[in-house]
Length: 105
Image (cartoon, rainbow, N blue to C red; front, side, top):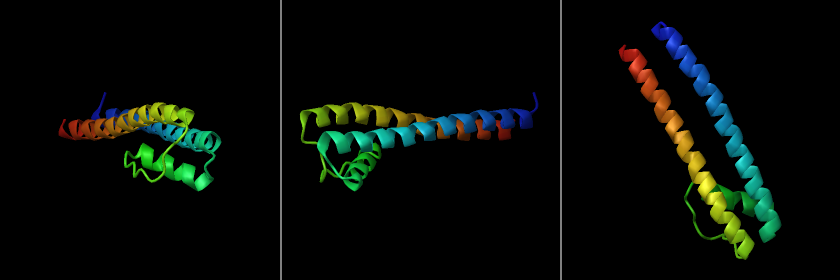
């Protein structure tokens, strides 16, 4: 397989994986916002703010769950979010490594 075909196949595969990860992030944000609205009784913007701060691991702490269910949901939500973020970062690193290797060959 020629270098350009390998690059094109890598790009196509990466694009599909990227689309899946973006879709999962959108789903994760939506589920988090809706869950925190229901569990904690927060407004949309407060839920979105907390979800964004949590998924980016900034965690300002000015908005936090106070109910037991909210805290338990947040724990699970954080682990899923960090795992998804690590997958996205790994994908970017993999693409860069493949491109560098393909250009050197």
